Length: 91
Length: 317
Image (tube, each protein chain N blue to C red):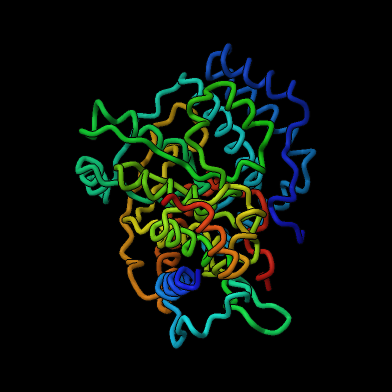
């Protein structure tokens, strides 16, 4: 599980070219888009989301439903994304 | 006039109006269609003060740029738009051919060559003239391209629901190729990417801000004043990572449905292959290229730009 989390973080960093950020800097439960009350989160926006989504699909082979609200849920945090990927990837 | 275009309601009331329009278009000779349109438009023009006012904002910008626009400019603008609707219906019905094209001395051969090689492209079009004319490219098979390909337009369908329902009825197949701009997500983005890799064209208009994400805009000078353009349309070019072309199809004679078309194709010089840090700057350059061509063509065909809302909202002095 934590392996998957690390890989997801690497994909996030690589696809969005986040500088000065290592996988260790990303909090598993913090929001990927925007920030939470504690100021945690990457503060990414919807166009970033599209690019990240494409990178996730290319790296993990999972696709996202077209229902927007649901997709948002999967992108809530690295943990949520990991849950979704492990539940939906074949093999 | 602090309204976004998506808040302006579609003109034309009942489905009955559209049925009538369709009947007229299909059964009367074209010169009569044009005549009827001119008469109906005159009364519409008299009654529709808000539309007149919005049209005037645009025409005044042109005036300041030295373009001659007469006192009946707003009427001509509305008439030209109404004719383009007729043109669209006839096109979808397959009643008029869109292949009377006058090529310019530009990058069209480059695009055709690309298509022949089986490579797709991302096209930025506009609300100037007839966007549908692009579709005629697919009918090009016989004349211009050696390879078959399809055109997939990304369209905001929310603004003209009734008219679109009619179009769907006329030609369901054409409607299927459309991608709804309001529901672009990971799946549809990947789908578009694949379509381009397979050698097809994806097209989006670059001169109307998105109804959904109004805050995602890039500004640039247009007809002498700053205006907002949709960031999404230009970002998509980077996301899809395909060669970008600007394409414009304009009726040579503004008020004639049977007019031949001028087809303008320009390959974008700005490359979006860069680091993300550089990207905002590159998008601005790409937009600048686009808006300069659009401005030039708007000056040549002032009545064929069909954006009936205040394009310069929020920037006017």
